[in-house]
View 1: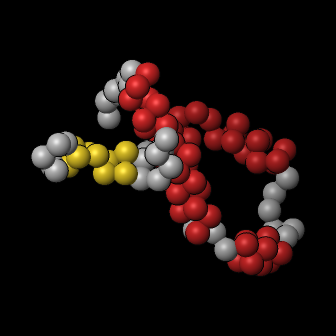
View 2 (view 1 turned 60 degrees about the horizontal axis):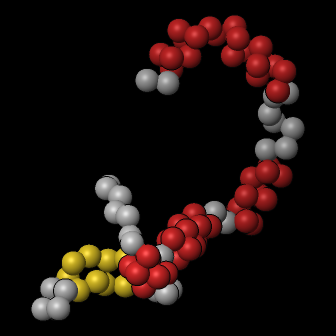
Length: 91
């Protein structure tokens, strides 16, 4: 993606837009779309929030309680594996 710097006039014009807008030239041809940063961020957070079910998260947390390992044990295991083994496992 490239970045375009808006001069003061264009910045003021675009700053007044509060939702996604189609930008057209004087002939009616679509030049592109503009989505205000706040709107774009809200949409992304909304999509992320839709991926998680709070009830399912709670159920899993309760079902897995006590089945994990203390962080000290995890860190010792990672150190024991060594860097080369870790790299191979993540490829």
